[in-house]
Length: 173
Image (tube, rainbow, N blue to C red; front, side, top):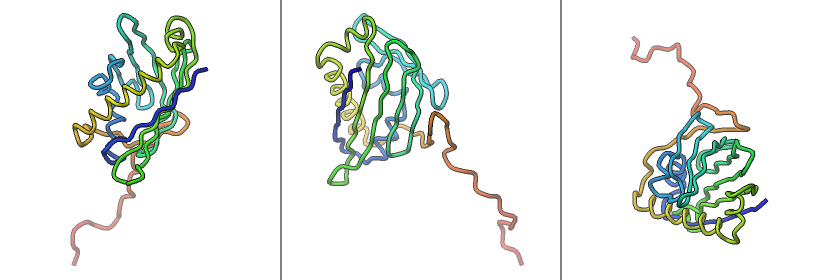
């Protein structure tokens, strides 16, 4: 098992960074290794990633997601497998975001051999975080958002339905 941890500070509020991160389909716009992302279900995404002639497709399940806090996932394939988490925290100054990534990779086959090259995966993660920083700081605002919560892989509604009032909405009397 190979564990990688990287953190980057971004000059946008936590809500902006989080909201843009949840727009998985936009990842190919700024990440060089992400070729395509499809949202299969609210908690399942299908990815195509690659460098040069080496491409890999996999599905990932979002197991935990809390708005403005974190997104955690696990790959649904057995080989190679990975799990990860992205956290969003206010910077010490309070005007930006400290975005942290933790990946746990299990090596198997050719893709596993590539992740085993010392420092390669860490350099790729660091570079891609830099691309995200440039992208969101350039936009200044998120291009969309998904504000739902996921616990143990189960999607919870964004906001509960308010109770219907039995009192008329117009002035009476």
